[in-house]
Amino acid sequence: MRVTQGTFSFLPDFTDEQIDAQLKYALRNGWAIMVEHTDDPHPRNYLWEMWKQPEFDLTEDESDVAMRDVRAACEAFPNEYVKVVCYDRSLGRQTSKLSFIVNRPPKEPGFMLERQEKADRQIRYTLRAYTTNDPVGYRYGATGEAAPDEAGDARSDMKGHEADTNGNK
Image (cartoon, rainbow, N blue to C red; front, side, top):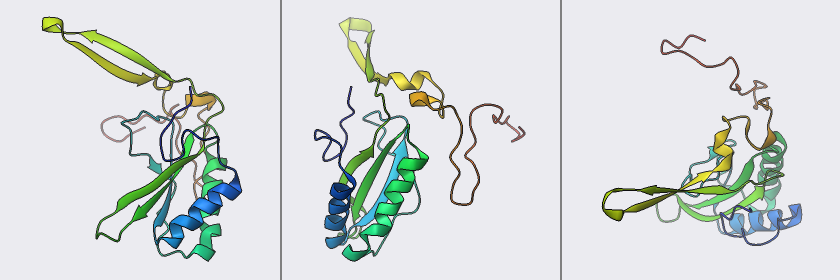
């Protein structure tokens, strides 16, 4: 099942040239560029993790800066979804104007529809991603090995890093 979130989700995956063209369009309109990633693409999970701080005040000629962020996020998270979000601040607040997925896991298992029967013949339906059966860091074939961040530190994985209520490991 192909996850369809964002502006171009029903089209085939973009090439680097097509991604760069969209980045230039966004920068030409004065929009800020942000790259996000997640391993839980549930439709109501609209707050993905930021790759780094958004790129503000770039010009169209500086689209290579945003493109480097896109490539770096895709390399760091090959088994996760990576998307570009473009924000317009012209109304005095951050408004999402454009978002599109630039990286997908090799296999997208899809969603389960759970049915719950309630009193008085009420039926409640819930969508649940099959990937949430696995803990964070181990979804979509990931081994829990963390990608280093900009400081060279690795993100903690699930094994042996759980903290108790006092913050001890």
